[in-house]
Length: 273
Image: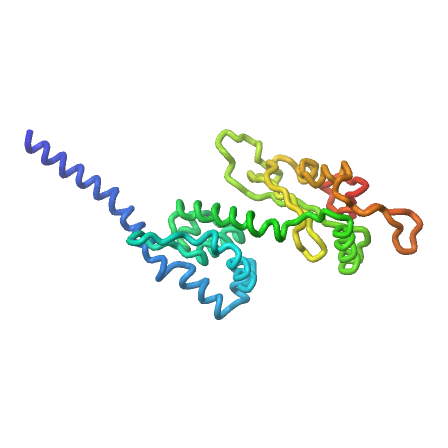
């Protein structure tokens, strides 16, 4: 009986070692983040030596990144507990998030690059995105609320693009996602992927003046646009668009309008070229 107990203990110890070692190795290579991670060895080098490559990698210039960091840093800087694990600084947190947004890489792929666990990445990305939306969104994603603001946009469209009476360009973008359990074909789109729809209106300088996210990918761009608050405001006349005017050398009054592609239905304030 005693011999059997000893054998059982040895077998159990062996099993524990089998399950323990891989996890230990994972923790070991993640601990080397500060010396061998993607941020330390690649990103910091490009910040100084190759700003063009940095822009290509992050889809934004380093100067713009610094402006963004100044705004969000106070809200994403973790508190270092004395005697606790070293925290991931705000600079690296923002870099990780922007890299994810720029490339759409999986958390697992970013885990190997940045040497940060998938669980930590999922928390960091969500936290940083919420801070960006809260503190940056109101500054840069602002729908014009007065007739004068719409007229200013129209003047820039005419000056830059030779397109009179245009106040915005509408289009949709499918954001690929992993569908929730039991979602069926609810998010399945014509590109044979699962997605949600980002509907946006761009201004004359490529700036985003309106965005709506969340319509299921099964809905076409035109259908997603109809569901947007801006579309409803246009239809009921509550967005203060300027009154129709005659174009140069014309006698017929033309309404101010948004330009879109064939996926959208043509209306008095939505035109397809």
